Amino acid sequence: EPEVTQTPSHQVTQMGQEVILRCVPISNHLYFYWYRQILGQKVEFLVSFYNNEISEKSEIFDDQFSVERPDGSNFTLKIRSTKLEDSAMYFCASRTDRNTGELFFGEGSRLTVL
Amino acid sequence: AQKVTQAQTEISVVEKEDVTLDCVYETRDTTYYLFWYKQPPSGELVFLIRRNSFDEQNEISGRYSWNFQKSTSSFNFTITASQVVDSAVYFCALSGDTNAGKSTFGDGTTLTVKP
Image 1 (cartoon, rainbow over the protein chains, first blue to last red):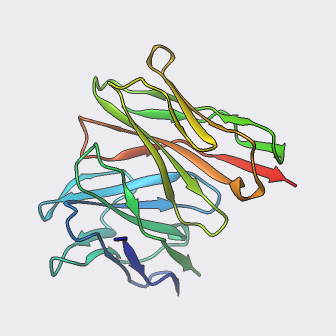
Image 2 (cartoon, each protein chain N blue to C red):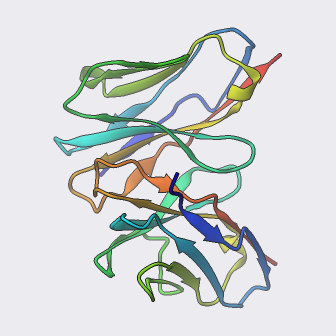
């Protein structure tokens, strides 16, 4: 069964460092998302991406964050200068249709900022 | 604006009991989609079900059933004869037509099933 894959599964970084989280969505999906879940809290929307551009972003997704799809398969989330409060599980997701299809989530990348 | 409320933060039951997880939503969209996801202790998010706003039929899948009531804006999830493996955090989510497919999640309900 096709799946969304994410790397790394866990990354530890120092505050102020740049981090790139990588995702390979399911190949025939058109819509891509990043969500964040701080430990023990709800799943929060960060950004949606379609047709090689951001469709919508949340207040969390400030100038420190960026996304791109550099090669037609990978979908990356970059945090330019990490803060302690960026420590969370980051989930990549993809779907075929904008609303009707289920979100297929990757297993998540746990980011720990020290 | 969209909002999903899961009023039950934690529920604890004994194996074989039935349990219902509540979900109430708010949206201005006339067409919208409701989802339930399970997050076991391992952390991944597992899709359970999707419901369209124009389809109010209830659904049963094995021990799981879902009751969608548009009149009360609720989409409740019942597990019959619960098992220890059902222990997880369960999230209700909502997606509407007027956003870019973004799903808004509730805060989640932590279900603990004791043997």
